[in-house]
Image (tube, rainbow, N blue to C red; front, side, top):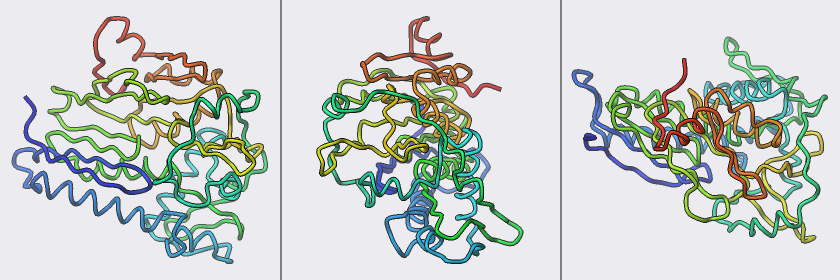
Length: 329
């Protein structure tokens, strides 16, 4: 039976955050569960204050409007930019952190946390012909550099960086490091989730995979370690003044919302940053990219409502039962 946990829920980074903090391992002298969860909350709220592009006073906003090519940056900012560059490099530019202007033109110039999503079925009916997104060959992310020794970020003046899902994945991973002394823990940052602790392996957490159309959950995974991240259109679709529909996942090659035939991707990985990046890569790449989930497993929802279970997840479901996810070596 699981030991008592502190369950903390709050809003941050435009999302719902949940922290489940168990007791510290024996002889570690760690904080009580409530104190450990409070420390994670303070960290996430600091992330939100420093890394949001919706507050002109945040460090990210100041970096984005700084006229200098080389800008002093905090360790937190350098970590974010480094993570964003890693995601871009890993996906060959498909997950591009420099599409801020295009996001604003698509209607995402302010936080949509409290705005209702447009009906997904209507958006799909009105969407253009499906096609995979493509990287932009001349994207300025390739000109961005982080220098930890000098404490700076270098980028061409005028190039702006978006924290996006990378920031949530990074926050979940930092939270996991803060809770590493727990017997069990689970942190969810708006769809980016980390699980750990020896007791979680023995008594895994149930992780529900949501239906993007709002129906009953599609699947329940039992996660004992590692990370799960879900990217999708369900909660981030809006209607433009001209009647067309838009969402927050852009095709870098066009700067327009990507309608690829994939609605939602859940990816499993060792870290939340990896899972977040992989889920977006598959969604933007369309059905031809689903094979990228084969090694660690995943769940894909196509816009014809087909649900595809991939890799180890598919194998577990065929055996009948909920999956205990263990990070592959």
